[in-house]
Image (cartoon, rainbow, N blue to C red; front, side, top):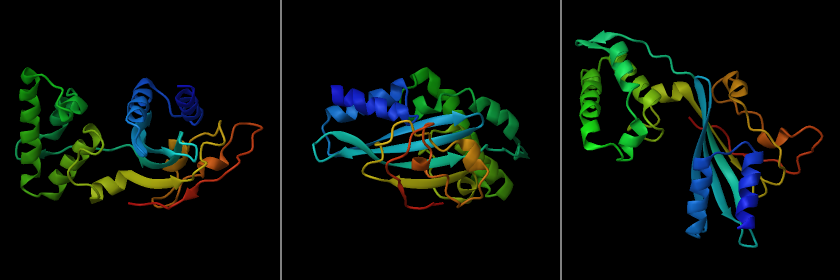
Amino acid sequence: MAEIRQLLDQLAALGFEGTQLEQDVWKNIQMNLPGFSVSHQIPYGAEIMFYELLFGKDDKGSYELQGLNATHRGEITIRHITHNGIDTASLEERMATINWKAFFEGQLLTEELAPVHELLNTLSQLGAGRDPDALGVQRELMLQYWPKGSVPWQGEKVQSIYEHKHEYRHPAMVSAPGMSLPMVSELSLKPPGEPPPDIAEQTAPGQKAKKKFRKKGPRH
């Protein structure tokens, strides 16, 4: 129990905190798996950072944070058009009213599904003609409102425009509490493909980082 609390405190010191995150960590630890991952996201205005936190056991059998995958998503600018009678500005307003996370997790009530299915049908019609402008708006709307991992076209051009991924690995990456995460403002100033500042190089005032992450490089 004390070890888990210490792990959660270390995560909080790195900037990873929140009720949902703690619940996900507890749930996975109780399964006693050799390793597991937990998703976490931190919004910064219109931009957002997605994290996949990678946990494993140390030599003593205690869980530790051993790596992370970080994805920076910049502000999505949706270029509204009218296509085949579909006003995409109106479509976006309707999409914004839906709890898409609950839908994809199967948590919506039966009576809540009708407007969702109507929107899905409209999205399908928007991209049916393969018009590049309409298809682009369709992709932008899905990327903006659907939970990460729900879009069926991972790696396409629209996604690569807004998202830049980086991986960090180090078996002792939690040995320097007080380190700050790369801020969205820092990432968004860099051209696509250029890695963000090394997390381990950013420390609390007066504290020296003991270890550095090994950066595996950007992926698009």
